[in-house]
Image (cartoon, rainbow, N blue to C red; front, side, top):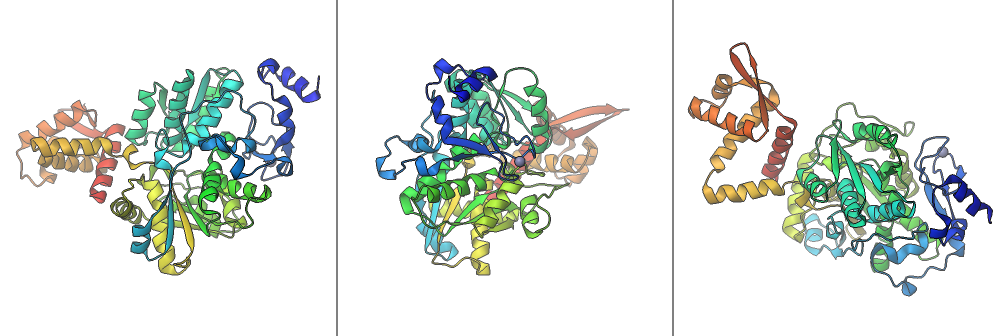
Length: 494
Ligand SMILES: [Zn+2]
């Protein structure tokens, strides 16, 4: 028996009989992008045993016969020659998303060649489907029937959908502030959802506890190298359509996404398909921009945000696990890191929707906001070819509220929505009681009406009350905070 086959069998990770292409392991290794150590691609431990960094698949590129003209499959599977071996494909039709020529938006911001890689058209409306397809497929190959994933929302929704298709169990760990649309996706796909912590950083810590409970596949982006493999296909598709652009703008949360896109371009160069490489621009929200801060501080690759907030929840990560990788992509490509304010993000989101008909989640719109900024500064030339990555659909965030507003228009309770919004805002500042709230509202409604609103908000679990002595105090619930955030987003948008 060949030594690798033997080792695989000893590890008990896979059944050799069910895994015909064992020799394919000889074509690639897992390498630490930080310390350079190389590991055999056996099992599902994707973190460097020496420095804890996310490993990356490195292929024997010179041995791979790769040419776009000879590729037959559709979507991400088209590029299977530069994937680790997958036996049991789980697919929902991910990839092959359009690269849209954004003529009107380009004109508005004052440039000539702008392309939008529209990842909202993936099966669960985000780019994460590319990664989820590979991870759930590998879990099946290795005989797992349970998957856990810590996520800000998009990957959790994707994993939930692919697990549903593969008939295996999904547990998704999400921070408390997760967009309602993404949670709805997880629930409809029948995933078990556990809310843990304020941001993704806290959810990532909790995942260790779940993994100790038994044989469970970890499909968390920050812990699984197949995330990079799935997402690098975005670059393959871009090159197949327009060759190499001058710049690619990518929103950054944990930092893995920009690196996966960069990896795709560098692999195409190693495969002899392209000669040039694009310059990468990573974008964060000003309220949470640890990678941008690290970029401008050459000596410190790691930056931790003690206090962080942004409406762009998909990129709200205080302590980004893949900051090193993001900085590597930016620096190797001679690129840039940029932070934009929430106001700039919201106005870019509106501009994107109204010029190109594309409703993106706030994190994606951050790339458009950055684009305007860089053009105004003169950092980007107006005749350069630029691609912005539109990671996920805006429908994942405020659609529930849009529905409320539509209903409001029909039966005329918009005014009540606005009173309720004011009450939520007051309670966001601090705990209060009925009379105080009535006074703060300016007394232009009756106190009975205020109590009616408070009761209705409590019935909907947006606020809760406690008796202290003879007075009933009200405070916001987590759900109330989420709804308030979404309502405020919506007001900025419309
Ligand atoms: Zn290492």
